[in-house]
Length: 531
Image 1 (cartoon, rainbow, N blue to C red):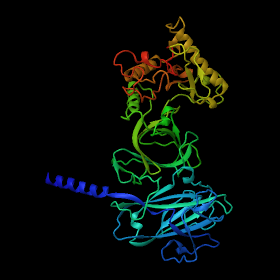
Image 2: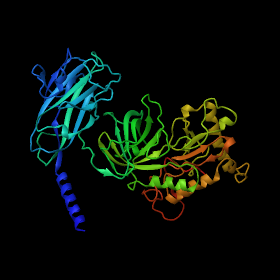
Image 3: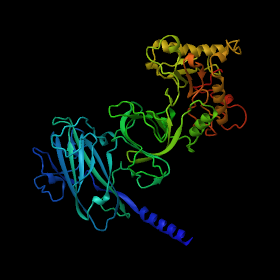
Image 4: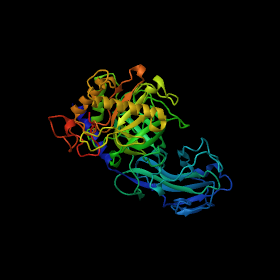
């Protein structure tokens, strides 16, 4: 017991010491640098402290031209070399060190001669003044983005004088712009400012914290994530076998490229965004991989359930669905997410709804499937907000005043041929007429000839059990396989259960008795179908 108490006391003492720290900038873009616009290659020692840079020009940091964000405007050039010395007093203890750099088009940076950062578009090895590289890179700070971030080993620092050296490269000697804004930021013990305050855009990294959840790190290289098109970014997934994960671990389950965009409708206004993520190969093609133990695929959702503070409602509903039958509903895994060094919170990695052998396992339509049995499947459609190619049910919603729109999901409207669009639309309309008609109970003429009744029952059960206020009217999915494989309309998979299980203050959310369907959608833009 005494040993345990001593450990607790020492732990709290350590935490107290580490809590007395702050971030500041050792090097900022307003500092004085030495710079060189080369005609010939500098000597190999240009990046170390004892190099003689007396022949170099002095200028305030923030170098470049044409972006209107430059403290020192330079002439058009293919390469530029920067040096900045700084003194580290004996009394200063540094816990963490970061290079934040905003650049156009490429760079490699050194601290006391050791490489600490390199742009991904630059080939390995020591770049020359005319090194060729294929992809350009636009500076981000001047357009509201974030600089690129690199964690730096603090042990590279020495007491006394240090040298930060950076080689900036342009795609060509006639490039329209150039930019170099360099910051070396440090977590320093104590609360006294030794160097300079960090810039307004700076956000502290999360690196030493251990989590029993997997960790997903995304680096957009300073690009802003938007609602289409997807931008190319890098994703690293930490999922250690022992269940203990740290943000600075380097043993990655996945370390590769992704396409990423903001997803959702109403949720786009929330502070915590959700994202569509597509794992990709270097040529931009699909990269089917397993993430966090989920079956291999390339389309994923990083769901940030801002409106559901329990973070559990979607995961619970999908899990119930997978326990009700052998029909597929999205599987989920929790993970902590960091984007560009900024901690974004706990997210839910979700399998995106699509036709796939590990998801909605039905036939995949080909462009030539325009007749016979091949035309009859497979399709995923939804009742949802209007989308490209949506059509309205021939029957108004339950109140008789609002249309009920159906949408093509997979294949999408643009990927379907006119014959395929007409077929599935006609099939849905025929089902609704059969249900609405006087022979609706007839096994051959009524609704049973068109639908998988059990799947509809399961959907009604989960919607009523959870009192899902979006139920029946938005994010309602159906799929249909070929007639030769059963071909009935299946009401599955489940999707979007954030405002359920009491997580709302409108419609019939607070009622403990009665049918949820009786109080959903009246007076709203989206209503329940007549059935």
